[in-house]
Length: 167
Image (tube, rainbow, N blue to C red; front, top):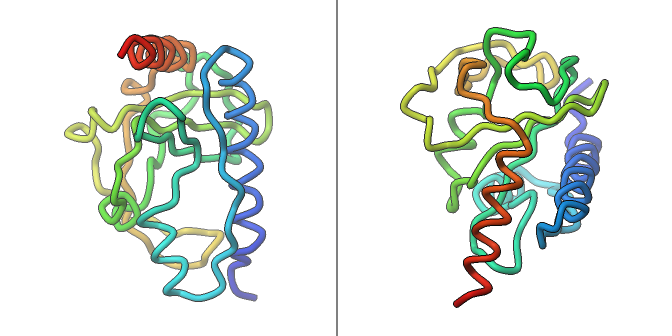
């Protein structure tokens, strides 16, 4: 059986809305756009380049949300794994607008940890087997030492939101 892209898109949309709801509860003006279901390879490629998981009304940047089957809390200093997959190399490199940050959410306990693409110089390229899609893929991987607390991201966003309001 092939990979179920529709279910994956819906699941991704669910977690993006989950993170957007938390950000909104902390005062960040943002939204998770409704998901669009790509039905062809060309549509999937277009969405990979242009889709933004969480957007702001005060900034053109966006957040990328990655849900994980791993079990981790929001305490990034005690992240229980040595590293994590950030994104596929092809997906990251093809994005028209690079994410302001990645937010990783544990599907098991809803922990939230973040990573800034500004640390990309410290990411490694790792080839691994994608169990969901049943293919070998080249991923960017980052050390857990590069993770930042979700609350730090929230504070950063609130500062930039406030600065945008001053203009």
